[in-house]
Image (cartoon, rainbow over all chains, first blue to last red):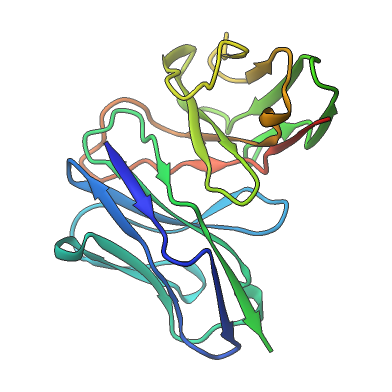
Length: 115
Length: 120
C-alpha cells in the first residue's frame, strides 16, 4: 500500500521568490514519484517524474524535485516564482512493480503568486 | 485526437437520475484509467482497463458505478441513481503501454480535462 502527504494545502509566495512544495510518501516497495500541475478547468499535466537513476529530476517550466529515500520525500522547487505558476499541484506515487501505472495522489497544494 | 477527450465537460443531474460520462483516449493507448476528484481534494482511483479488459475496479465506490470499454478504445463511466455525494470531477487518463513496467521506467499517464458532475 502507498500514500502521499502534501504539507500545506495552500502556499503563497511573491513573484520572484523561491517555491517549495512539500511531498512525503509511504510505500512498501520502491516507488515511482510524480508531480502534476492542474490549472483551473483543465486536466492534470505532468511536471516531472522520478523512476530510477539520478535523484534530482528536472521538469518543465523550471521546476525540479529531489528524491530523498532516507526522508521519504519528493519536494518540488522552483528558484523564482512567476505569476503563471499559480495553480494546484499534486504529488503522486506508483509502486515500482505495479502492473498498470496506477497513481495514488496527495491532497494537492494550491500555489498562489503575489505580484 | 492529440489528447484525451472527455464529454460532457459539465453535467447537472437531479438526484436519482442516471448519467453517462465518455472518455476518448489517445489513439493506440492500451491503458485507461478513471479517477474521481472531489472539490478541494486529490484524484482518487476508480477503475483501470487494459484494452477491453477491466483489470481493477477496486476504487468504484458502490455498485451504482459501472465502467466499460467494449472495443478497447472509448470508455464510458455510468452512474446509476445519482446521489449528491457523487458530485465531483471525473478524470480519465490513458497511457501507451500496459502490463509490467518497461526497463526504461514508468509509462506516463495523459489526463483529459475532466467531466464535472453536479447532483442537485
